Amino acid sequence: MSRSADKTTSSTNAKRAYRKGKPMSASERQLAAIARKRETHKEVKVFVKNPLKDVMIAVCEEEGLTQAQFIERLLERELTERGLLDVKTSHS
Image (cartoon, rainbow, N blue to C red):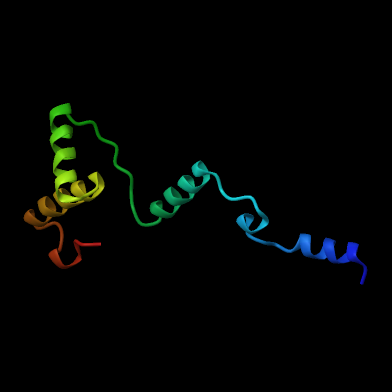
């Protein structure tokens, strides 16, 4: 086989983009991560008063939690107290 035939064959193989020397950009990686997250999570957009947010940030830093984890815990606690969430299945 000639070299040109080898090059054509190898360049037409379907390879992952990063294997071809073109890594995903930061925004592409973030979009991919969000797409994966949407498979198991739903987005909640809320506005809270500034003082509440400031205290939440401080508590999260103290406890080593993300804000999402903090809010999930609040929701789990409240829904469990109301009998709307089974304690055994509340943790992901």
